[in-house]
Image (cartoon, rainbow, N blue to C red; front, side):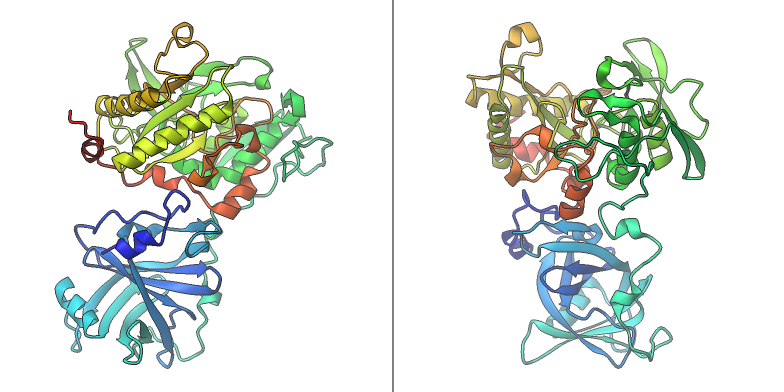
Length: 516
């Protein structure tokens, strides 16, 4: 039923969810998405029989019973689309910004107001009419969709005369939710921590390093967070300050936090910037504020219980960054399913002798094998010298099984590129080859989170990529704390599906002709 939806989209180039079949059970949810494409319109969707039945409503729904709004039926969408918001990049079908305008539940009813089953509702739709009651934040009460005989794809969306109807003119664009601006774009422009001008900026910057104050206290999530030594130079080559790093994390928190939520963090602290090696800290310790969430896990390496920091809010994020945590390194699993990772990671890690074009070739080969397996995957720069390939798993498999899957993929890649890749973890045995690292898929192992800054010159960032960007000419130095905000505003969060619905490992292996 989702064939038309899938044919219109290249899921390596759009953040939209792929159509991987019908959902098993209908929850009778609805969503209205404001879609600022070539022409602004509203998409109305009803969850019915395992898909989202969808109509494009040029003028948007109305609460005025006198209005008969044109609703053009379009292809069925996957149920996962009900939560989609973000920017569909230029060159893709439906390019433009999508935001959730309203959502809730609906009840299909007959002419007498009796509830209908999904099968009955489908019959009514097939016959050109469906009545239903909506229970959303904006849309409430009775509505009807009526098909026009002149053109089967054209319907009218009509509000019933009930206690929720209005008699004045209704403009949905004036009724956009105003109390949650962070949901209107992938990232909200935050007030700069420091407002005084500075003399330096990076070559690729779109924001200046304006951090010359020494300290500042901000309020976040009901807590006071003291930010200190803001003018300290963290990245000497470009004279980028600690304050600029804190500014980045405050501004980008809405897109970074989902990749940290409920995940234990291994803290790497560089309180004097990248001029020294810094140190690791896993245990939160007694000096952390009581409001910071922690989770205890037994560490076999030390034989002790470690209280890992959990970063679920901007206050904690800024507190950690103020400690000198330039990068954020979360576990692959959450505290809810600590033994089952949310995703598989293939870490393509070059030696100093490898070119980044060789990294690209390795990632492209990895992508080809995953495509053959039928696996969805997403890429991001490591922020340093390599690229991370993520395969979403939705915590369905234990680490050992995930690691075995990763070894199979890595082995296939190495077989195809034997001249400059290796599976050897030892530097001496690896030589001047790219390390295809699948051993990161172990409990307690970490890589830098999506959008995390990295302790390297230029204040580079682990940047999520569109698949079409993974080609020769790409380099991690193109992405830093000064240009990521603009990128996310233009593209949306292109990585978010990496922590959503997972692939089926057994099916993937079967597609590769492998049985375990």
